[in-house]
Image (tube, one colour):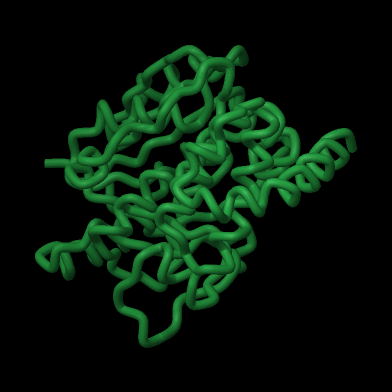
Length: 293
C-alpha cells in the first residue's frame, strides 16, 4: 500500500507547479501519491494537472477543485481526503528534495513504533542553503515549540501521521477572511506528541512576492478575526513568557481591527490583555502604515 501522500494547495500557480511535478517525477521512491487541492485557480492549473494525470508518472495523482478560501481551507480539504499513513505538504512553488520521499520513509521505518506524531525535517532554498537553522546534533526528538524556544529558526518540513492530524479540529473559517495560521494544528499536536528529528533537507522552497509571507502586513488588515484566533491559541499555549506578551499585543491589535469590543473579556489572559491594549493600538497604526507601502 502507498504510505505517503504529498499534498499541494495551489492557487494560480500554473507557472510554478510544473517544478513541483518534475521534482516528484524524479523521486527514486514512488511509494507516494500526489494530492493537488486547487483553491479556486482561474489560470490553466486544471488543464495542466489533467495532462499529467493522463501520463504514466509512476505515482497516482488526485485533483480536487474548491472555491477560493485560503491556504488553511485547502489543508482542511486535504486532510479530509488523505487515507495514507503519512502526509506532507509541498507548496505549489516548492520542490520535493532529491530522494525526499525515500528519506521520509526510511526514517519512519526506524521510528514509527515510538509514538511520534511524525517527522520534522529541513527546508532549503533552491540553491540548497538551509532555511534558518538546522537541528542541534544531540536533538533526536522535539516539538515545534521546543525547537523554536531553544533558538531554532526558519521554516521546517513537517511530516505527520494522518490519524493524528485528523484527531484535532479543522482550521476555522471566518466569513470574508482567507487566512488562519497553519501552525494552529501543529501547536495543538505539540501539547500531546513529539516529532522525530530528521536533519536532512526534504524540500526546496522559493518564497513568492505575492505569497502570504510577502504580503503579511496586508494580511493583518484583511484577516483580523483569523489572526486574533491564532493569537489566542498562542497565549493559551505560549512558547515563552516574552512571546506571550508579543502575542497578546498582536491579539489586541487584530481584535481592534476586527472591531471586537469584547476581546478583553474573551482573552485567555485578561489582565495582560487590558494592559497590552494601548500597545495593540500602536501596532495597529504601524500595520496600516506598512500595508500602504
